Image (cartoon, rainbow, N blue to C red; front, side):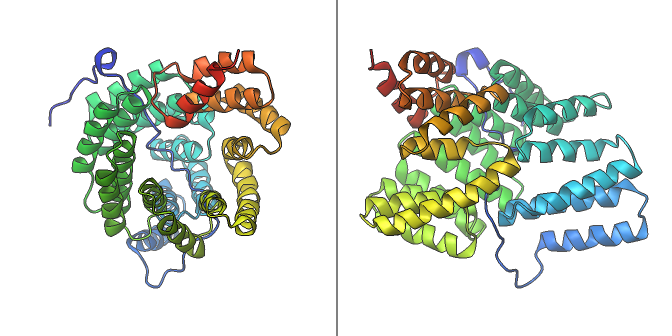
Length: 387
């Protein structure tokens, strides 16, 4: 396939950080037989035993642990990956593969400025690696530098128009309000996905489904979520997306069953929050309260690891809890990253605390890309109605 220019000014571009896997669960399901990734971990450990002073084995181990974390939503595996990366750099300082892995892990930990610094360090070795340009794209998006992210994404596409490149283009287009362009880019990403990587294929299907949901093509979206679950059973993102599709279809009980199944296998803050909202909608207030308590417990731990309070802030604001603390934390978040979602959280926190004029200022920032995100636009409509 030929390299294609993104045509930014005409099409609009945007990105949801393909390389940032926000793994937010507490435990992994018990494995009955070693998976392909488990076997990769074992092979890497054997390689380290044979050559403990070589970086390659440590890099392979780190990569395998990070893949396992994606597959199981067990965030703790990333600590093992980080240890392997540190050991790799200890035996061979500045080795290129370890720097790439470090940047990828820093993105996972929401250490976006650090990730950007690491990618720049890697580019002192070589500038023709499309994966590193993807990492730069991810970091710049999360920091709110969308023009810079667009340029980095273009470099990535020019070097190699593959599944990961198209996924970044899709998200950039989505952020800039080009829903149909995002769908077309995600279709290209799905087609280019590695058939031997079931988790990556499922992830692409979920992202395509999400864009179809944005376009209100709900049946087509749900088919993508079903396909993702067929490819990779119990994929956490696919389960949650399927639950959203059921809610959209009016099948609240079906969504509850999906969330309950997910929670029974791999407890997570996101699933607890969704389940709490569903219970509340069904009038099961006691059950909702228990899930909200689970959410806050798990999310405090996530926030400590990810160094981001955005999910907790939004939860408090949506449920009219701890509004002053939510504003304090939203202000701190904005100091670290100025993406449109952080701007929206700060605007909504200011509004909830009665500071309407300031809320309008930050909502203008949240709308600067022309996003069609329903949450942001709903907040904007409410805030802008106030005198």
